[in-house]
Amino acid sequence: QSTWGNITTTPMASHLELPARVHLSPLDQAILAIQNGSEDIDLSQNALTDGDLAQLARALEANMSRVQKMDLSRNNIQAQGLLSLSNVLRHTQISFLNLDNNRLDQGTLRTCMPGLVNSALTQLVLDNNMLDDYALEEISRLCESRPLLKLGLYHNSFYSLDRLATSLANTRLTELDVGGNQLATDGIRQFIRALRSSHITSLDLRYNVIDTDGAQEIADILKFSKLRSLNLSGNGVGDDGASFLAIGVRGSQLESLNLEANAIGDVGAIAFSQVLPESNLEILELYGNTVTDTGAERLCAVVPRTRLTTLTLLSNQVGSVALLDRLDRVLDINRSRQFPEEAVREHVETRGCCSFCCWPFRRRFQRLE
Image (tube, rainbow, N blue to C red; front, side, top):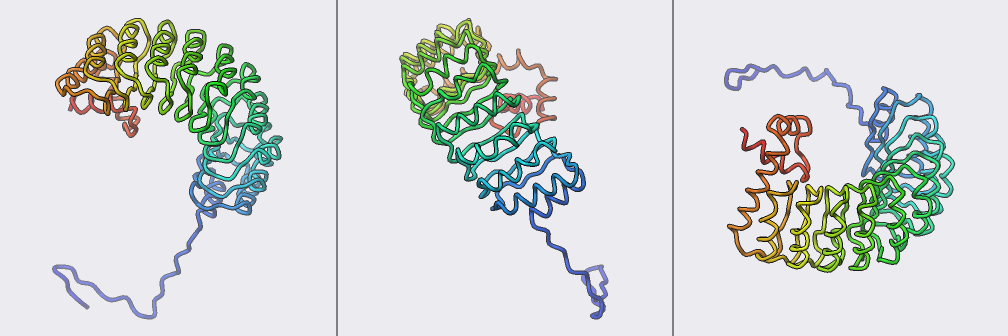
């Protein structure tokens, strides 16, 4: 026996042996979860190979899987692995499939198309793969054949969206992310015009090479589209492009517009100040531009007559701290008007306010405490 403080311990007899701890790999744990009826499988960042996908596919098929969401991002999946999975998708309830950051190309999609078409997928993430313009032909076929609602194609190798544009009216897509590609104005022109007859409400074109002409193309169709959220951050629309977009925003359904890092100065800011009271915009992101006190003052003056709850001017050339504080106060009044205390509390408590987009709710909640 030994005593430490007020605790008396007796050493375990040397002949007693504890059973060895069983170590299950992430793949084995996922298969066990499938057998136990799990609806959400996360195998992201596990260096899964095509052989691992074959095992996973057999487990899905053998257990009348109830899985609805599957995250396979950041692995080493190639054609054979995705083929194994796609062949059993028709026997599953999987509606969300994340294949971000694997090694998928156009040939892979063509090989796997029959299984994908006959699946229950409504959300598909193919970000950070090796897809090119020809892959869009396969993706267009999939969008026309399946009721896909959300599609992620961020950071692939697209130079043109023409192949997707031709089928856009025949799809049910509502959210599309084609940011981080090589899309210039000529590469998006046909697609932008096709938005008039599409169901897309959220479009992400960040970090492409869209210039003033591209911004004008987009502005011209805004009031005829169903777009509510548009991300153009990290392009090069400039003051003239911002002025075109400001005109397009008036009379449109757009509620969120991200123009971060677009070389926009006071001319663009003033253009927006003139139309904001007549727009539906609630979020306008101007972070990382070249707006000075002049443009910021004009924006601040009209905020009380707008629906804006978020207007970011950080990392611009606004020198007046008092002006930024005043802008924050008028935005807070708008948030108070649009989001009553009960709604703020419910939002924070149910969603946890864990993302940047929730910061207006988080700030208001802290002030209520």
